[in-house]
Image (cartoon, rainbow, N blue to C red; front, side, top):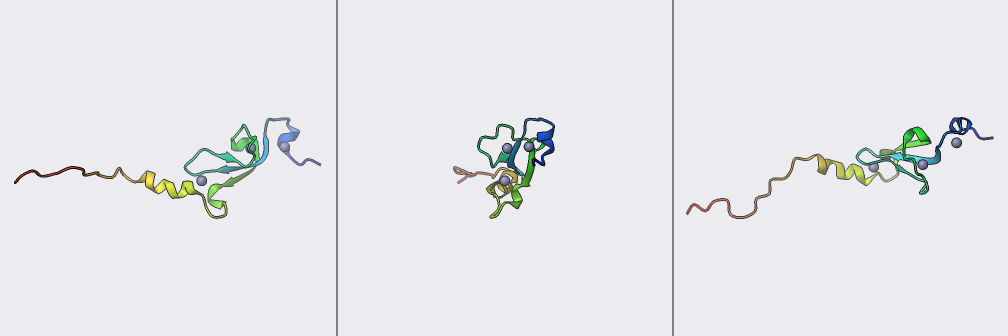
Amino acid sequence: MAACSLCDASLDHCHGTLIVHAYRDPECTDPACAIPDRLCHTWVADCSDVAGGCECLEVAPVDARPEPITRTGPQRLVG
Ligand SMILES: [Zn+2]
Ligand SMILES: [Zn+2]
Ligand SMILES: [Zn+2]
């Protein structure tokens, strides 16, 4: 009945869906999952496929930006 090649191979694996994030560590839909590795999952999804999108994709462009030039304090005291 089981149609899982990893079960047949008696390998440690998970039947949850691993969500692979573009800018974060992978997450598994099974909270008990201890092996967030795509090789240990029969179901792997990209976080961009998640309905509603993933916040890691929204955060990423901010991280990719160069550091903002913060100008605090007076720049010119020439008077
Ligand atoms: Zn299995
Ligand atoms: Zn994500
Ligand atoms: Zn898992």
